[in-house]
Image (cartoon, rainbow, N blue to C red):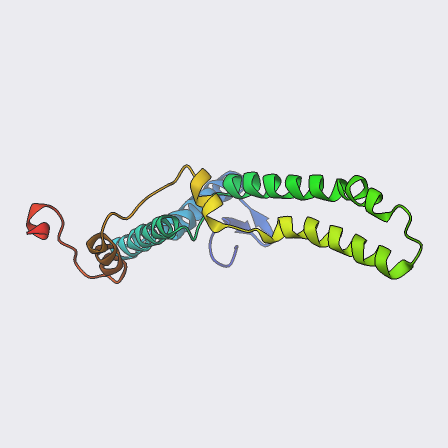
Length: 166
């Protein structure tokens, strides 16, 4: 920094401390300004990209492809709670069926059937459950609306309002 003139030298290995501190502060402020300054085109490109990403996310919500983490957590907790209850009920449900059996293969078959029934609880996945509890329900009313969203995402101009519907 001494070679760059940031520190003010008064002799060999000696510097003017107050002048060097002021010079260093000005040097850092200039660097910060240059790093923070963006041209208008770059800012507009960033803004356009952010709007596009927002629109894409909204479209995914409308299609039911994107869900809030709180919705996923609620549905998964309900689903796993039901699975837990079904699993814990296996002994009381199966025990009466096993009374009097002495052979291992039939006992294994009955136990396996009980486990499969419990696992069935997890296989009943329905994506509409996420959509039904979502706070972000958005319905596309007609195909024209879907087409206009796709056109907007592709960068084509979209005409809205009364003239667009005529």
